[in-house]
Image (cartoon, rainbow, N blue to C red; front, top):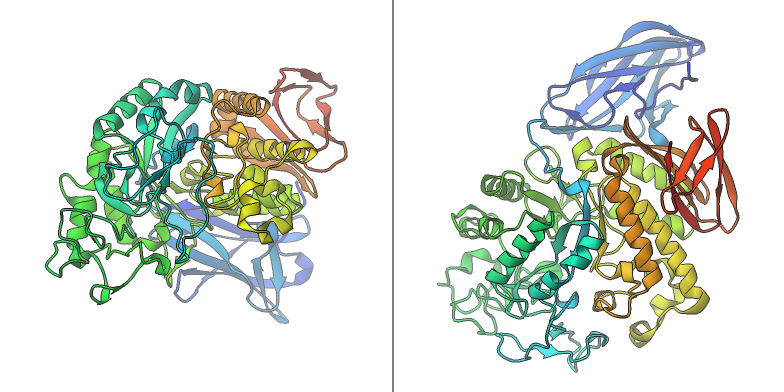
Amino acid sequence: MKQLSVYCSRQEIYKTPFGAVQSGEQVTFSIYPRRLAGVLSAELLFSADGEDFQIIPMDWAGFAGARDCYTITITAGEPGLYWYLFRMITADGANYICRSTGGQGQVLAHPGEQYQMTVYDGNYQVATWFGKGITYNIFPDRFCRLELPPADGYRSTRHVHADWSEVPTYLPDERGEIWNNDFFGGSLRGVISKLDYLESLNVRTLYFNPIFEAFSNHRYDTGDYKSIDPMMGTEEDFKALCDAAGQRGMRVVLDGVFSHNGYDSKYFNARGHYDSVGAYQSKESPYYDWYDFSKWPDAYSSWWGIYTLPQVNEMNEKYLDYIIEGPDSVIRHWLEAGASGWRLDVADELPDEFIKKLNHAARETKPDALVIGEVWEDASNKISYGVRRRYFQGGELDSVMNYPLRDGIMAFLTGSPAEDFAEKMESLRENYPHDIFYNLMNIIGTHDTPRAITALSAAPGDWDASRDYRAHHWLSGDALEHAKRLLKMAAVIQFTMPGSPTIYYGDEAGQQGYEDPFNRRTYPWGREDTELLAFYRALCAIREDSSALNEGGISFALARGGVLIYERTTPEERVLVAVNRTTETRRYKITGTEQLTHMFSDEAYVGSRDSIVIELLPECADIYKSS
């Protein structure tokens, strides 16, 4: 028998089943105090979130070596978040088993950190198709244009860059404002023209940042939810894109920005560019109740205080009807036009009931529709604006953007110990329902973060330098080669963790960039880093062809300092991932196999006596398949 500890929530000898559990499921807890501790009785202290602890006596179940075993089986209650710890009574008083690193229990004389148990509705079926394929994230204005569009002819004032490779406008005007009204002219037809390219990367989902009409190039200030931005194309173009993508086994996911919309929109219409009567123009506007005015028309709630992003009252009946519940609501309209799901911008600013209604309408329209949320932290226990969120308890989100993975990868590859990365991932695996964890949008870069290659290699002083410096600074020579090695390691981890590896357009071609707008440069067609692109193509093929990487279990074999080794396994396949971020060669013994095949090169490595020693080269990540 493996040497026992007093408790560990991540091993089934102590808690069965592992991690999150379904409502109504039987859950067994077992603790193993040392017999010398003189435990007379033991109790499970268990509570629903925000409620007092129930004290549940545990049964003595006999001896386990030099330890006693106390156990209890309970029935998981209604979906929600639950907390627990254990109390042991001895002749000298009470001791508590509380949570420590790695799910291990630590014995304290007073209550300490509690264990979390997520309970979810097992009747809700997650749209698991998303996590089993590669996603490509397109910032629409910057991916591909077929022709130079005119600057005029739009409701908003626009400047169009003639040179596709120019730096986006980044300096404020004389009033200190950055208008974000410079465009490059990427279009839906441009995306259609690159479907062969996307297919060469084995892409299965196209995730678009907003495509609807808006004043700004980022289009998060929606002007009209039911119209494709005219510079992007038409609704017929959108349908053609969905059809062409579908013929190649690709789905389309749209960005839904529903906590706020545009100052310059048909709904608010502060600049009068629309024919409608907006809330800014009249209290009689059909949209007036969407907004919260403290003093009409100039004082109103806005997203993070940005006046161009007036905040909406999401639970207003008229707004709910327009966005979700009406027969031609925004959610239903675009799913019927060919979309397969929605990514919800700033999901932590949308009420749970709003998300639940949205999910219901999406599933009513398309039974396997995806609803995924933008959440930057552990979404299972997220508190926003004083409210504990219910994202994963059933009927809300199918998963979230995996910012904890991005943060963990960036930290590990820039000096944080591998132990911290493994702990962060195992904590998510324990807290998230299984299908949610395997459905994550696994990112290393987005339109809200610096480009991955830049984030991994930027000097601390870069962030204190001028905007002009960051606009025009490019990695080159040895610095670029080092950055590419780091990016390859990051991509290998990203592509081999459970969930959908999501490529931010141009990362695979070596595009660089600091913060917004430098992280939103155009895709470098004709100027790609061909060596890096070839690496990504190989990595995408490995991910596409591996059942273990798509749906296999995960276990960390080694997480120490600068070395990270983990396995993904199914009954049919065993894949080993080895990352050595140090500048020294390391060696590691793999047991349970006599042959490994390097999945990039197909080179075979043969050992003996059911084991093999692999050599981990400096600043390198490798993927092996056990034979």
